[in-house]
Image (cartoon, rainbow, N blue to C red):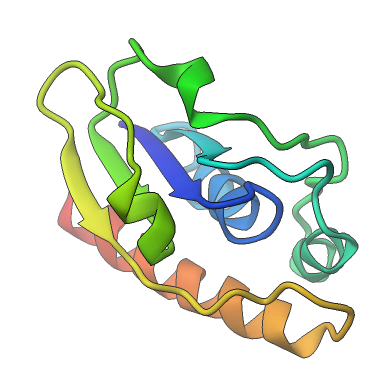
Length: 130
């Protein structure tokens, strides 16, 4: 199963979703992430929140959604309204889902933890269905 997670900056939510899906999918998921307006770096809070659950995303770098145009995905999941409205076309019959997760951007770690857990819950439900 190939999943693309999209948000605006590809610096928080989509990076955490990529890491969680690859981890929870245990080899049956190939997850990717991108942004419609990529930031310059992955936020330290996202890295720290993922480290707490044993997933290392410290080497991740934000990338533009255009770099994945032409790739086939089973699911394209937007994590914010901006990404939903500006989601690039993907060939094939990708199922599009929208999971509006609050942007945890900032210095406090708690919003990153909440976002991580919301994303984990949604991915777990998706993997049970498919």
